[in-house]
Image (cartoon, rainbow, N blue to C red; front, side):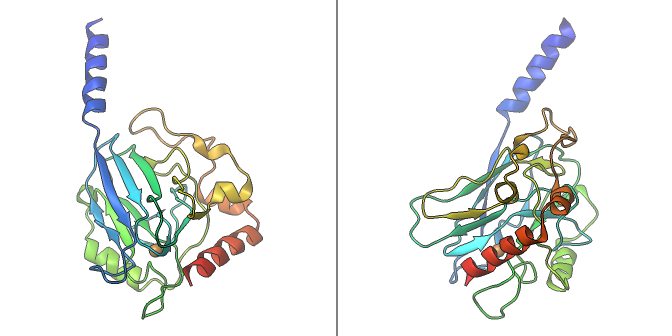
Amino acid sequence: MRFLSFAVLATFAMVSAQKVIPVQVGGNPGSPGGVTVFSPSQISANNNDIISFQFSGVPGNHSVTQSSFLNPCEPLDKGFDSGWVSVPQNLSSVPEWNVTITNDTAPIWFYCKQLLSKTDPVKPHCNLGMVGVINIEKGQKSFSDFLASASAAPTVGQAEGAFVGVGASATGAPSLPSGAAYFGGSAAAGDSGNGATPTSPGAPPASSTPAGSGFANKASSGVVLLATLFGIVVAM
Ligand SMILES: [Cu+2]
């Protein structure tokens, strides 16, 4: 009984301490860092905190895709992926993608999949530094090393991932005000299985959930090509 009360109290304390941390996805041409930024690019968060990715860089077409320190511009196996969010000028509200932290003991790395930038130099966003990390202080790596390796990455992975990732998960696609366009993995494949989310902090992603590489294997190359083309066409 005493244990039960403690558990209830602990749960209450955890829930009430939940933070919502906004991160801007994409900047504006005149803003510091230009178009190809996550701002802030380094975030500290605890279990149950929500990273609220705001696709506020307009016009823009970006993704938030989980990667790794070793391969900053390639999707992580079973990693999260927002899908493409294309934002025209003059939208009434900002598309938003909320990701809940489920394991705050290790860094969570991510990048944008966009292959074309509008400004010089014309390069993939990941090569131009559109990368970020949650809880870098929980690892032994430096952000400048991560940036340098992103900038030198020979390819930028386009495979579609799931909403549930490693250490952080969303319950669905980004919110989409009218006027914004979306092309996501689950939508593209008519796969509705991506809504699952771990039930407790630190729990591994549900095994029944299609995840990054799994989906990529399942998707026809046509779908991946279409997604890539969508990203490029809308970016231009
Ligand atoms: Cu981008």
